[in-house]
Amino acid sequence: MIRINDVQISYKDKNDIVNAVKGVSFDINEGEYLALIGPAGSGKSTLLAAIAGMLIPDKGDIVINKYKLKKISRTKRALVRARQYGIILQFSEMVNRFTVAENLYFSWYAANRGVSETDFHDRLNRLTDRLDMKNLLDSFPAKLSGGQMQKAAIARAFIKNSPIILADEPSGDLDPANIEKVKELFLEENAEGKTIFLVTHDMKLAFDAKTIYEMKDGRLCDLIKHD
Amino acid sequence: MSKVLLILINRTKLNSFFLLLLYITAAFQLSLYYFFKVSGDYHNILLETGHLTAIIGFFIGIAGVQFIITKTHAYDMGNLEMLGYSRPAYMIYYIAVSFILIIVGTLFGLLAFYIFENIFNSQNTISKIDFSYFKIFKNMLLLFLTASTLFYLFHSRKDPMLLVKERQ
Image (cartoon, rainbow over all chains, first blue to last red; front, side):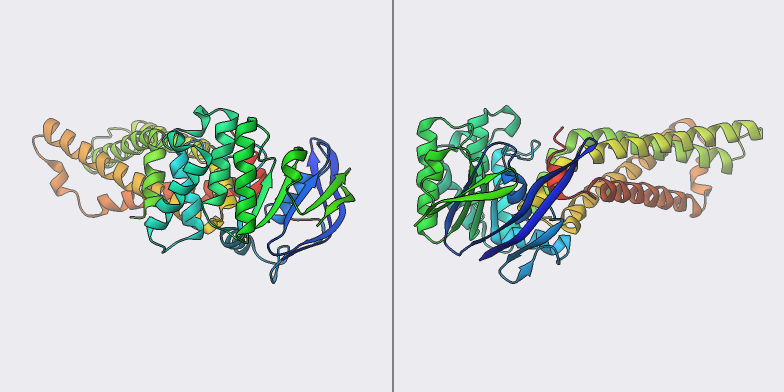
């Protein structure tokens, strides 16, 4: 379970201080599929980065299992990320000097040190079939289109087999056919017990979630849906 | 050697090759300086000081190149940290690559000097040079390794989210 408790985050943008998240609280339960929607600049991505332990809130706590992300060291936060999270960032950030397959291997290895590589190849085959991206494995991310890169970033998050998926606009550059594939993947992985926290503009994708919150101007303003 | 380290070596080979050339040149220059000094070929202090200054300048230049190359890895380091590699974990990989490069560069530099010395100096003065000859290379190795480590520490100091935003 992830508990987000009165989280406030600000950052410096040129000379201004931007208050991106202003006292947000909610819980993400184990096995839940939760979507956060809202206009651009409402603080959704910043909140996701904080939940991932990649940014530290100015105030408030984010607790994952027993770990208070603010209280533990940067090294420990990385370990929490390795074991708990598969992360898709907004611009499908990938290491450009590695091929897609190498990016996926680094992701798998972070969470599965000591596990036989056959597990990697099994998961790789399954994911590349599901997302129809076998032909992308030897390409470098810089050579891919936005949609292809997004599929690679999604595969990279899922290949770790982490219990929690944090996804920031995972369908932004995808065509309708691929959006359907991603929707199915998210639903199936959630049905198998994965917790999914989705940040998106895409209501079609968000509507699969069991709980949908809306965020505006750094605040959680509405609970739109709760099954 | 772990597969992760092999991938890292393979994918940074262009930068590495450039750095390797610089380390070879540095080791060669250092050998030349030491050789002239031991064999008494510096006929005046100005010549010796000039050569030494040029070498120090070259070393500073190499440190500058190391600084720029480590900066180009900031985005990669942010990505690795996002995946769950801790800062010490990925630093070990990057420093291991630096260590290999510096060792190989130094050895090639020494070898180049040895060949050069055997071709152009029939007296084979190098055989008379004592063991302290190698100490300066140990110092060179430590100097570049320390610089490289400090630069990696410097460029990875920000939160991983900010590192990820440093896309080249």
